[in-house]
Amino acid sequence: MKRSIFFSFTIVLTMLFASCLNSNPNSENTNYNDDFVVNSDVTQNKTSKSIKKRPIKYFPIQDTERKTLMSLMPIPVDWKLSDKKSENIFLESPKGVKTFYVLGNQFMYSNNNYINNSFRQMGLETKPPQSFEQVLEELKGLAGKHGGKFVTQYELPQLTQFDINLDRLFFKATPEQKNFRVVATEWIDDKGVKSIAVIHYYAAYTEMSMYWGYFIDSMEAPKEYFPTARRDYVNALLNTQVNPQWVQARNRVMQQKAKQQNAGHQRRMAALRAQGDQIIANGKQQDAMTTRTHENFMDGLLDRVNITNPSNGQTYKVDLGSNHYWINENNQLITSDNTNYNPNGDLNINGNWTEAQINY
Image (tube, rainbow, N blue to C red; front, side):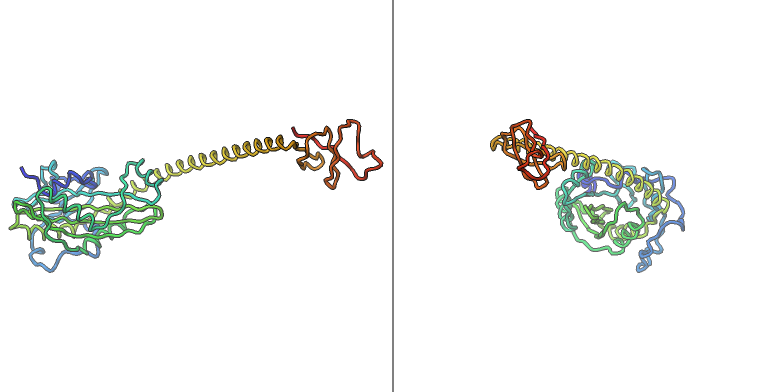
């Protein structure tokens, strides 16, 4: 059986969200909850009376990782949860409509190689940022390998604002500047099946690094039914209701992860500082040893010796060859080989003299 374009995408795209999405087939008729978050800038499409009159149900989407109801999606009553999860199919209708689990990729990147290495050690993929246009070209190439042909694209500013509003509710460990862009792309395969892929592109910048990526909502339908299915699908995305309790649960988890990561970062930085201090200390010690060795070599070559004035601790280099060195307050020097000689008792010499210590 021929694979759909978007089933083929799963071969190379990481499923960022599908792992935490699930649905309870026994709860498809869950009533609308007024406590659920509705994007204040996004409302039901009122330009089409048929959309308002079309019967819908609110389909529950679960975050199985946190065991919390994540959102409610308004879908036509004839759309059902698919039993073909192995093909990444989420919802199906008797008219051949198929929606797919969310796919996506996310990458980390920094101009600092140490930070990139830290990301990799944490199991995160690093990649220099690409523009939306570059991402779309890659998807075109991938779709083309599986019989898919790109048809058109158009901006979805309402969904862009939806993503912005939702992101503002999420906990951020560090301040960031984040850009969003949501673009609908349409495709057709060699069997005449038409598809829509809504690409949510984002790029976030922090002080030392950035992360970027995209996730894709996708749906396909037979060519003759595609306009209706596309309208229903975009309407469902625009009016998805997010559970505030899920946002709170997600934020608690992210805060705990940020705390753990910060503690790990501090431990790594402390270890690096200790390692750096040891390197500096070893360097100073090695430098001092090298300096002493060089000085001893030069002193031997030039027949010099170090002496110290015990009255003030000052050290001098003097010519080698005498057994006694006497220094006065003017740093004048008298040398002698006579053990019994003391310039302080010599009537021909003035001042106070101190015998220096010879440092061999």
